[in-house]
Length: 444
Image (cartoon, rainbow, N blue to C red):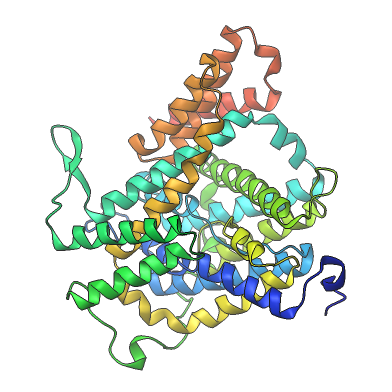
């Protein structure tokens, strides 16, 4: 085992790797509760006609299984200390844009996730990933990340009741004297304090403290006895295999854009995360990522598995840097985290205490972290600023990640050509320009 994971070469040991795996798990354990809440549209009281909710318990099980399988793939195949789970942002796009906004059944949306995962595998095995990565301008990649951050934060404020609808101004400040709103605000403050103090797993601990305060104040019904904490593994029956059953429904222009969005966001989020984690761990060689193909394959295979069991796109988590900071250097770190996600399957009863007020702070904090890429955009160049700004602002304002991407990708070739920089645009961007124009035509 030590030889397989190259412990001696990397200067690590079982104890260090276990602590690193545990640290990463705690840093991202919030996804076990946020993902079921998001995909089941828990923060939406009344759904439009024809829109149905995913089963939260089944999604909880699917989340844990997808995280465990993906992390195991990454640890054993690519041998990186990178842990995977259903991605934040992509789960919001799945639930709020595809299902709630477009009215696409969640079963069909899972088929879209499956298709994106299969395409990702083909791109990885064929070597086309470098061409696609180079085709998308760095400024637009960063704009997409920041826009998703704003979108997630907006969903968090909305589900907490801090931001509410208003007929005159579309949105307005909610009732800050409401006990549930105050509970969410408490969660935000606690999470901010913990992260400011560099507490690893601060988001997760913030959720725990918020739930405890909610129970103490009577705003959340406490779990009853040991059965309210530990229980049987939830059934996957409501979601398992639905991606296959509805695969024939994805062949239309709207689902094409959905699939491209799943693929695009996962593709670049994974690449960025792998580089960040590998750099911190000192695993980069000549500014290149060793075994990059294997790492991307593990990520895409995890998405396929996740879609089959019943969850949105599974991707690499930047929280893996917490484990690296604790000394993790080998794939054994990811294997340890995989085991902990499987163990978490027995704690599904705790979902009952994870209300919208508990998950909202996590969404807002993640939004803050994702928005950090704003600083790297070339705002002083108008031809860059316009498509970047439209990408970012359109996501929360239209309640759609896909719409934000489409607007940015349409305006980028226009502004660049008008500035005399048309030769700098990759042919793939022109293809996407046409696809997204068709998207708006058919959507309308």
